[in-house]
Length: 180
Length: 232
Ligand code: SF4
Ligand code: FES
Image (tube, rainbow over all chains, first blue to last red; front, side):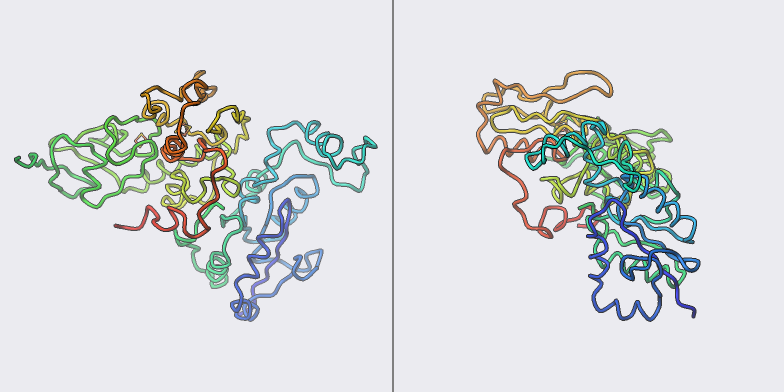
């Protein structure tokens, strides 16, 4: 059997979901016999070099760079998974969603006690532009599967990958569904 | 005392004999059929009928099971893919209407909304998240009202009073602007115990006792120990 090709990315997330991926522990040895990793922070490969079977997205979309990367993943991956609360519903970064962008930036750069009081909000063409709010991934592209949790357990990640690698229908056990 | 008269009802094509004129959720539960509920709880005298999570078809019509009593020859549809999906979609709507950041919620693991979502295998909401803004009220002596999480079930406004029998919570506004408020006068006299009772009565994490929360270790919280979907 050809090895399945996996790519992963962290958008507006904390890398906790990626850490949880590593929590599949010894199963990693089994996994590495069945898959190869392409573009991913785990390999530090920054571009796709072939068609991807399974793309895994951590984090929602907080800036224009996140949206670009997400769309790139959708284009290059046969199956796309939203991994964790931030990818699924914005998560803690979305706590800013009821504020205007102006309020949010002023709070972060002017009003916090650690502000350096030079009263500038960084702005440069090389810096990603913040979106008006943090968007769940499936509100921007089609997502095929959702693995909830903050972070999702290593077990749910393994259960999902094990099924998809074998081209089985993905059925998640109830006991593995959680939202924190 | 003679036992209550039993009457036949049909659930998903199967016949059951249940006591006459008892709450339908209780009647089904006695036959091992657990109907999801959010505003209703076991032993409740008057049902609230606010959440509709308990929707079943009765004689062909969608109805909130907790608002009905058993009558002869009731024909109930419960476990159909359409009805399971309908109940799940009601839960999903609650998740997008409020702001349910479970990872940072004091009630996570003890929250009925979460537990029903898990039982219905919700992994995400298919409706757009609204990210509405709700003010949090810190002004109470004992209680914080975290309105982002309120599901407007009316448990607190209808069923909770202080030790003097006075109401502490009420609703103001209409429709989507409805919000729960505290009566500062009657809230003042709440004992810690009473405040905890209010927190426990709220199915979600909208009523919090100041200084309480995050006490039970992960893995040992109410619905982790006893998930709703495990048959008792
Ligand atoms: S505060 Fe809690 S108990 Fe009161 S209406 Fe809201 S969800 Fe229900
Ligand atoms: S449980 Fe029946 S309407 Fe809420």
